[in-house]
Image 1: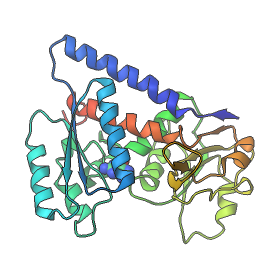
Image 2: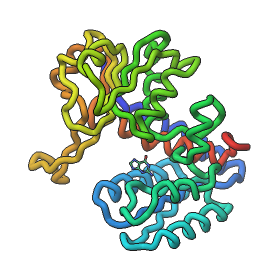
Image 3: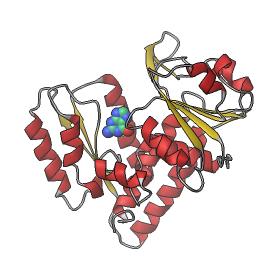
Length: 293
Ligand code: GUN
């Protein structure tokens, strides 16, 4: 079994990005600049955004953090997005999700300029990704694809089973794994809460992507000998064992599943760190006008 060490690969990619930033600086170019908007004080969102801002610093990007009150009117948030859209110094923007229930996520996502949508959530970016046109690919699927690529994992003709049909992981993963080329050329099955015989389908997977957000859902019985297992789950639970008082749990029962796998991602240290570097990679592309010219 080979551990897919997202932490290590993410560090390598960060070094590559930081080198690129140094070159930009040396040639007198503008530093890539990411704006992150957070509404309210959700603990998990605070942590994610803090990680994103710290990652920007590590590679030499500029970052701007915009904090808005939990009660902020939707219109004020939309105006803030317009302001960032119109700020020529800012290359990319994310609005951390979830948003409070009185704000429409759809409206917010569609307000972000397609060229600055480094989360790849705008329907134009999603649609372009689906039909194989240049687009920002959302960070988690992009991170998984890069991990598969860096470990040279064979994908052609393989059966890839994805558990979870979310817009930000399950659906884009299905599109990417079934596209022509590498990584891709898989036969893809998407499973969800209404899927019948889920265990049987999972057992037929050469590549199993668990992205349903249910801690320890995938057990050894559900995994074929020699499968590649990608665990996207990050359920935060209270823990007396860690300094932070929190522990992250994946969707896979790692201890019993790992011995059966050819490759597996740990949690933490697998997909999570790859997600953040993918956001950095998208921001670099935005600053280089690589996707939209
Ligand atoms: N909430 C959970 N994951 C994400 C993400 O990748 N981007 C944003 N904006 N919000 C999230």
